[in-house]
Length: 68
Image (cartoon, rainbow, N blue to C red; front, side, top):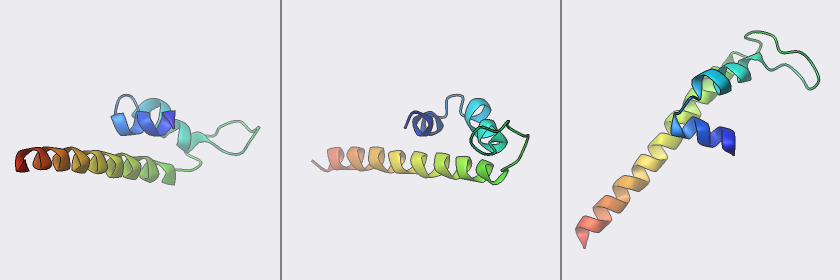
């Protein structure tokens, strides 16, 4: 949950999170550079989807407030 929150908040997710995901191999094995490069796409999609979700919630609250 902390990792997903750091991706969603866009504060420093690029260095520690996205590049660590691409270097991961298996449990108890040393990381290798760019082993799973498709995790870059996953991290970017998670950021876009969560930011759009919270933007949609914020806009919904603002519109509901002005409708009253």
